[in-house]
Amino acid sequence: MAQQNSSRWDLGRFIKTLCYFGVIPFWGKSSSLQSFMGDRNASNSQSATHSSEKILFDFSQDSADLSNTWGAVDDVVMGGVSASGIRLVNATALFSGNVSTNNSGGFASVRTRNFDPPIDLTNYEGIELQVRGDGNRYKFMLRTSTKWDGVAYCYSFDTVINNWINVRIPFSEFVPIFRARTVSDAEPLAAKHIYALQLMLSKFEYDGALNPKFNSGSFELQVQTIKAYRGA
Image (cartoon, rainbow, N blue to C red; front, side):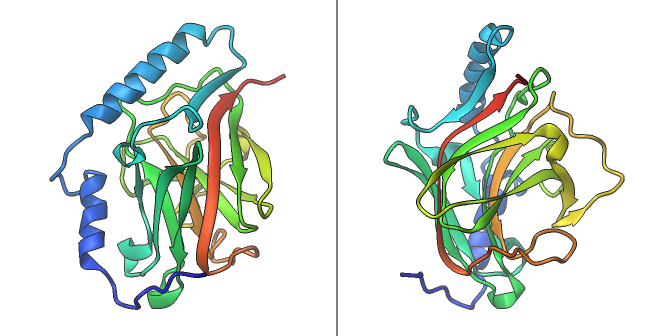
């Protein structure tokens, strides 16, 4: 059953979002995230020369609290009332919540805090997701700068209700966007400096076009792994 959202904007949740990502520097950087990503980068780099893939997140092996790494960025940042979160469920990361078009909103997302140091994917061809969805079309984004509200590199993918699928995304197919509008003069995606990852459900595709596979109300996207892959 779809959750019932209030049509009233939540100032407290808006401030909490900005604090979590350091836009309002109350909480600062997460030392646990820096340690987590530093250790992961070090272990991955040792085998990078020979490995055909680089695991960024394997939620089937993860026992840490995802709230140290991932936080919600919903349309509350622009006056909307959608609400989402991410948590570990049955050895997967479950991105779920309620997306509402009230108050001119219509998107829910989760995003990592900035990695410090950034992830270097220079020697890889793209990103592969293992996901199980609900029939909605979602977006996956890479961020190559530390800016809170900067250009993101985005790819839209369809899900199949209750079916696990692998979504393979070459870096060349990521679209540079800023607030759901394409940026024609953006620099090519710099795979050497990946600062953040993001998952989103939005009523919009790009440049004002509507998402043809968007349903408002409750949603669920399970994620098993996020990894970089090399070419064949």
